[in-house]
Length: 205
Length: 205
DNA sequence: AAATATACTGAACGGTGTTTATTTTCCAAA
DNA sequence: TTTGGAAAATAAACACCGTTCAGTATATTT
Image 1 (cartoon, chains in turn orange, green, cyan, blue):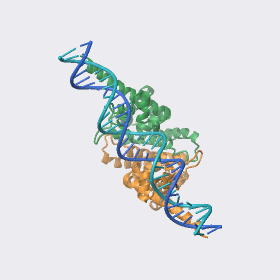
Image 2: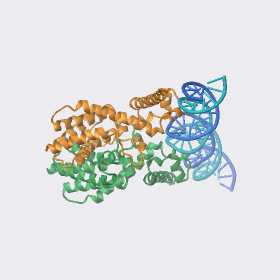
Image 3: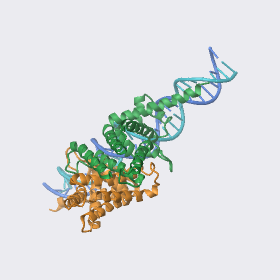
Image 4: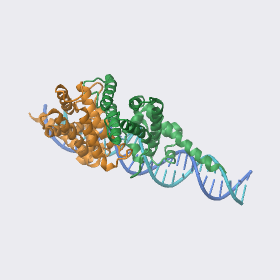
């Protein structure tokens, strides 16, 4: 009686199709083009059908976010190769910034857009960011333990490094940066890179 | 023949009413409750009337943003009092963070939300952020000139300090922060404050 | 084959930003 | 003071949106 198993598999496959199409639309057409109706069109089902697989749009976007964070984690795993912890930190920072440039719309969904976080009910923990956060956290902890950085507390260290990178990236992503400073739009990436290099040099012990 | 003058004054007054109501709604009910229809209700005009005074919603939000930046600039002017440039930088940082906590929805409109930036047509400069940016820029320049900080380039210095503060604030504002770290929601402000204090200590020469 | 359970959808509800044709209001000249 | 034309305001519609629900079609069990 493998019918219920097949049914479950089919349910999972439909969810996959929905999430993949949504992710594709975000990347190719931008977040604002993603609507239940547009997703339904692309998977050739009626809009109402999507609600048989997802409670609401926020839950759907949460799953897209989950996939995006999995991609970021894989990037970390393949691009962080050095033995020296501080060099690994530099690699992590580069991988993070590169990700934000290669997938700006996904970065937005992961770190800026409100919608996917509404999927979390009161007091429920957000797990999507954990692997990426932990990667940085334990790296900072190692750097602190081995006296490679000026930080004392690993949580403050993690939030500081992450916050620094995210601040520059998100200001630029939302057009607040290049239009106010004397730096032209096309030079911004280099300035951001330079600021991050300088920051890492500054926290080095 | 002061009729055209009066007409212009009335036009400006109507725009004021619209912007004030929109700002009030953002602060009191949140950005997502702000719709052309809701604004029209509150000023007791039809929705279509608003389009006689604003080309679209983005232009309207741009004017709300203008006012919000004016408020931030006034905060800077009244709260930055010290003679020593580095102490002024500490005061600026505190004023910035305080503003984000007292007016989180306005902070969102100023630095995160896309909509008001759509009001700028191609290649047009964004002027709203200038006074606040310049306040930080010339302060950083003074700190560099007087050898009070480790930075060499004032633009990099400005973007670094601003980015650091904005990164922590916006991650927290969008719920990406407290739910991932072991820091509880109510302790986050203290952690952010501590991180910023530590950062300022680190850039000090 | 009939009954039941599952999957799906058309149509609607209430909301959004925006446009257009129409009506109302205002003001200057006759 | 009445009237003609400009200016201001609006009702209604358009094209979207997320979501719900009654009803239909399909698949499975009896």
